Image 1 (cartoon, rainbow, N blue to C red):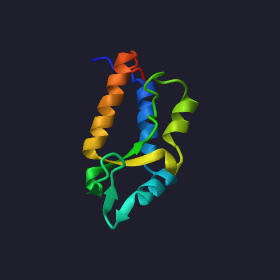
Image 2: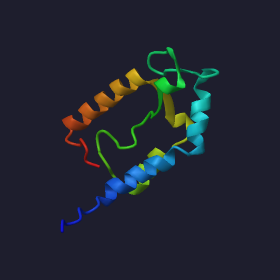
Image 3: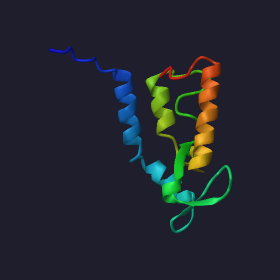
Image 4: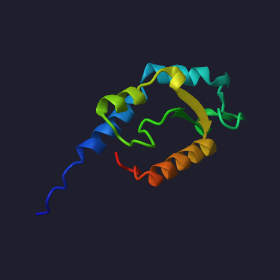
Length: 115
């Protein structure tokens, strides 16, 4: 009989909270605020318009600070469930670029996947 692998509770909880955040009313408001016409959204970085399937709703301030890493659950929850003004619409390409830059910053300060 194989041994059951223990669950990483922190990973399990952060994943669950992120899933819950998709139903956060401020998130829906931010998406509505970024719509320029029916089905089209303007990217906050390149200023081009894209259909909904080609955009991401991004936290302007990363949920996990790139300099400090994971600090506290209260800080994580406060950043995750931010006001509508704390979100921005990014096209997939700009979002990938922003994520890559943040990951590189985390690596440079030794905080990559420290959460």
